[in-house]
Image (cartoon, rainbow, N blue to C red; front, side):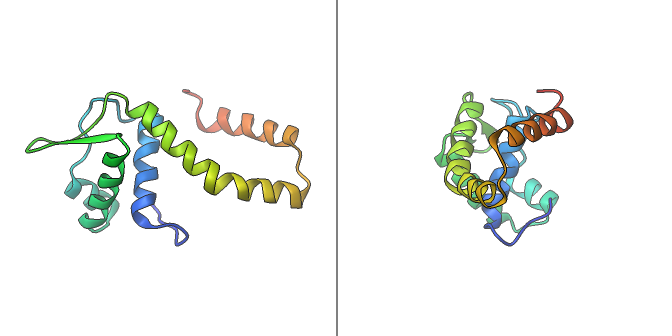
Length: 125
């Protein structure tokens, strides 16, 4: 995973996990990597992963079964969609609209680009 400097690392890890859920790589009810496992695989401090997991747990996406590990909740997909929609609507969309306006890009042009992007990047969905 490559991190960018414009967003806190723990939130980038949250986004990484949410994407795994949304593309169905990690399924509802299943165990997810431990704090240490994910820290090693992403090359980050385990405390950063703990912060990400706390954020996801607060939002009802994961749960901790003491002594067993972390698991996705049964409604993890729905909760993930809600969390990511809220983030998109408040952070990404205003910037997108600003750029569309400044660059004079129409919604029709955006729709065509969106459809092409989806076909190329998420053919399984």
